[in-house]
Amino acid sequence: MVGKSHEPIRGNRSSSCASPQTCKASRYNVLKDNLNVLEETFVDSDVLRLEREILLQLGRLGALNLFNIFLSHKPSNIFDLSDVAANSVECNMNGLVDSEKDKIIVSSRKNKQRRKRREKAVETTIISTQLLPTNTLHGRYQKPKRSSPKRMSDSRKRRLAVARNEVEMSKGVKVVANLERIRTTLEEETGRMVSLSCWAEAAKLTEKALQQHLHYGWYCRDELIRTTRSLVLYFARNYRGLGIAHEDLIQAGSIGVLQGAERFDHTRGYKFSTYIHYWIRKSISRMVARHARGIQVPCTLSRAIVQIQKARKALSKSHGKYPEEDEIAKITGLSLSKIRSANKCFRVVGSIDQKIGDCINAKYLEFIPDASICSPEKTVMRQHMKEDIHDLLNGLEKRERQVMVLRYGLTGSPPKSLEEIGRLFRVSKEWIRRIEMKAMAKLRDKETCRNLSHYLDS
Image 1 (cartoon, rainbow, N blue to C red):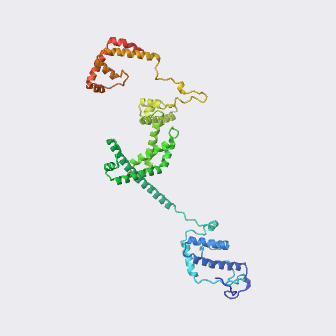
Image 2: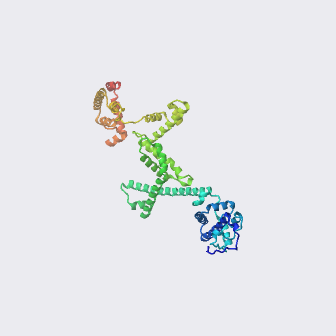
Image 3: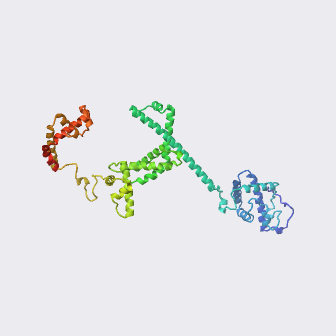
């Protein structure tokens, strides 16, 4: 490209053109030919990579600022630099100045082809160099961002894939639930553990197919519990502080997920994550109702308690006063007896071994009387009443006395029904009823009632 001959290219030129502009023009021509060489090197590479390498070489040569200046004069094409020199230099330079006399620049014969190639590359370029700031030109080019319709389509595809995966997982949970139900039925019928062959025969499968179904179902269970753990944590945090450990709440929520997976029907059009909301809340609330209190409250009564609390809160907000039981019964539709029994469950259950306060070193056990122990007067009265009743029973026949003792549990044993007593005597319950009526008629005598009347008065 460069030789050591001191002859100019196209004849002699006067030294009047040797000015700073002439120097800039000659350097620019050298830079242009270097760019041509670079283009031949990277012609088959990517356009973005080619631009990056060109800018890097410009920075190394110290001509990046000059390139940006000429680029601002003609922004239409970043590679077509053939006419820039004519606009920037007033003198038409075809030779070299005295400082460049030892160099000869050989022009290429393929300028037209390269120019066409450059124009085609610019047309296919996605990112325009002119629109990028200067600090971006020195660094790496960023990849173009995807448009919003493309992102929307990708997110929709991901949602559909997740929905299909959840449907498949729920099917696997249903399969293993049905198989375990068959095994439980066999164990209840036989009263012992069921072997794998018997289990496969009852399920109408081979042993290998049964093992495959079981492994797939267990895998689906683990995956559903793993993917829905964040949803279970979201619902479990609403039940904190009720006396149940956080791990137990999460376990109850996972059980609800599996219960919902067994009943999930994807043909109805709703999502799996939406469907299992109800089952997670139901499982956690049932555990809270069962274990949060010291005394277990039935599920039906716990639901009634929730209804009463909501109605009481709404009435107190609207009327500005504490509502009566009749008003709550009208809103909830519950009976007064059920509302009263629910009100008793509102009481806080505590331990009698708990200390009364920080200052007093005493327990509730030391101040609360034991209601199960009768007073001495009642104990004596009850003992005399038992003796009088036994004296009255001695006046009956043997069979009648035995029936009355068994029927009312007078010897400390629990009372028995007519059928149970008839089974003991090997007679019908109608025969026992007749014996009881005959014995009661004897005990209802006026003198007998007069002797026991003082026990009723006391």
